[in-house]
Image (cartoon, rainbow, N blue to C red):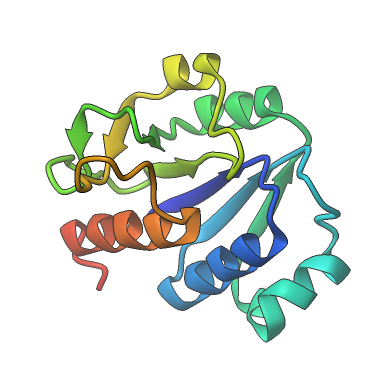
Length: 151
């Protein structure tokens, strides 16, 4: 199955939407701190409503801790990025891949780009910067799950 990693999220409502998405699709979530808000269960419950009981959430205190975990687990990092050279529909997803979305305000640092085994983008009309991070996560996860026969 796929996993969804949220790199230092800074908008609680988007995080709640992605947790609900993950619960409905059966996707585990990795939250990479620090976040721009309190990511305790009590605060997440407000944005994730009653879906939190249906999603496996792991918190990582830093990107370094997340990266060490995923390398040890043999998990391939697939980064959703506006600068990706491969359209998400052309990427061959594998069981166990972890799709990472960046901070709403700043994406991810270059070091994270360098660590990613794949960088995928959603093709958009000229002049458009980006989609909402939760919408992008839903589109890419949907394609990955379709490829893996999970939906």
